[in-house]
Image 1 (cartoon, each protein chain N blue to C red):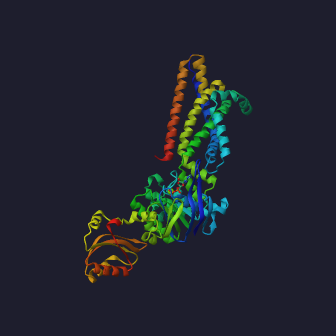
Image 2: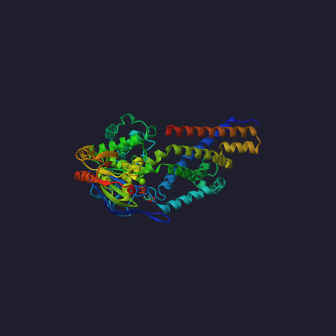
Image 3: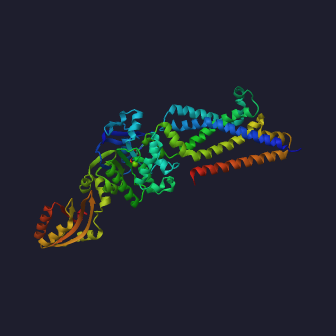
Length: 343
Length: 216
Ligand SMILES: Nc1ncnc2c1ncn2[C@@H]1O[C@H](COP(=O)(O)OP(=O)(O)O)[C@@H](O)[C@H]1O
Ligand SMILES: [Mg+2]
């Protein structure tokens, strides 16, 4: 649906040139929610803005729905943009216009008939749950409501792609959840492909199907959200995963590890996919002559698949423990011993 | 020396005519210039840097000529346009030359205040340059435009008094003739009083209108 081929974006300032995108290749499939995550200044906005040519790539090509945008005439480009909706971190609504007029704007620009605009805008406002706010002005709305107006406006021309530039970064956590759920709903109900950029791994975990990590203008890692979360390759990706998974070992457990007694071994068991922790551990406790002590754990769901890790202490004879470990291994979870110096 | 109220009334109407017409014409000229100054600058909607530089310099040149000099320097042109170099109509020509570049700058600064995010949204929607100007830029700047045009109007009242003094009529002329040349302080005070009320009234109206547009 969206294809980047060796896209470079170089900003020329008086004293230097900044390579905001340094050879980006990317393929976003129809109907998916794709997230690009990176720290501030990594090039996320530049990447997103190259999709609807708010920024023209310095070189390389960007294709949306089979159309290479850079090759289009001004008129063709304006038409192509109706297929690409966009929402912004700071909403970018017209303060001088009512909610109705804001949402109607893209339709007015393309000369849609008044009656049709009326029908369409009210339908959109109902969809984003703002039917009662049509005559309000943006400064009478909360951040979340403003973003919903932004979303309604972006959907007005029935685009096939929705671009989200840090769409929830200015919102509180609860409002963020609402907006993310709305985006998911848009994706599922209308089949709209969503490309979003964010610096928050929580956003990626919440709604994305696939993710790419951007750093210094390059995509350094990409894959399904599940793969990147369960098995991050780069230090940056690991950092982002850690920011939401809280797999830090708590201080109390750390102390235990450090003054480890003989016969006490601490292991980290990573659960991936369909294997949930509890039955496995209770089976281990039943089958083997060891004591089992759960020290710490965090389990979440990624794309409806349980995922997480448990820190457990196994107490018993070394031979028995190694048999237990072998059993755990066979259950397709990964298990590793946690040593003092590894923390 | 008796104050002649008919004279004052006539002068007041002349001032209103001068200010009203010169405001109209200089806005008709200044508005497009102000828009051009905004949309042709570097990185803007219709970037045309050489054009912008030339336009900006021309505006600066007119802005730097003191009004009293402009008033005199432009006399031949005034004759050409209105067929005379004195009278209320004749005063309007230098007033327009004075106010149009000023208004262009005021409008430029109002338009530059518009949130770039809104213009970005316009671009993302595929708005044409004209649509961007008329459906995004101007409505978003409207309240600031009203305030700045109020400032320009008040500036024009001051300038019209000066233009009047060299034969254009109006309250300025009246104050000079009675007050300065005939030492009639009463007329001078009345004139100044009317000007003060006029300026206060305009500023209040401008503020109210701008606030109404902003709705708070
Ligand atoms: N218009 C611009 N002119 C010059 N440099 C820019 C411009 N836009 C972005 N940059 C630079 O490009 C880099 C990437 O910016 P951006 O794409 O905004 O990153 P992000 O959205 O990840 O914070 C940064 O170093 C930024 O300073
Ligand atoms: Mg950014």
